[in-house]
Length: 245
Image (tube, rainbow, N blue to C red):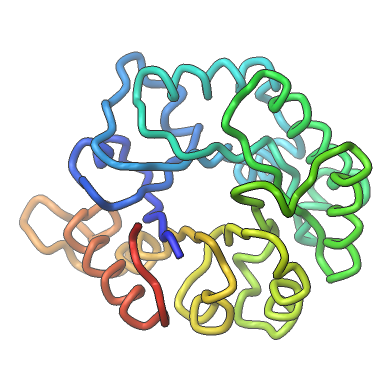
């Protein structure tokens, strides 16, 4: 299981050889000069923030696709990028005013559009209960996307309820796919980490926000690389079979 350490510090791409990272498009997009990665990394599209703030995507698929291409060429070592997916948590549905079926259709449509541009995007399954995730998988199948043959399939809308038995049931039912778990923490890894191909989390930053900085220059540990790496090491030590390939 490959674990991507989430961060909002693009400079870490130049400082963490051998440590896979996850960064958001929202952090990279404003940068005129991008870092050159010395490690593998994955791109988060920033959908949670986009939908929470705006009730929809303000970034067009064309603009996002152009950005992904730029990151691929200028930063390098990009494993994959998330599409502009639509999360299905209840508060997201209230924010967008749309249904789960709408969110699923929009997620699949965006993946298909970005895939046409030969970009390294992965499909993401969205839903809330098991039947809805299976329905989303059917939408991909009807669009000609053979999910079991792909190297990675994202599992969305799980990070805030990973301690529940529902997610274990969903992951088990989708065991024929190489799944990536977004925002998976210790409880999630201990429950179903062995069934995932990869996962990411930046829960360290939230915890570090409430801790005093380790040096005089740090007000807290929320942006501390040393703290993040120590947190990651502890997390992987508790996850059976976890590594950083």
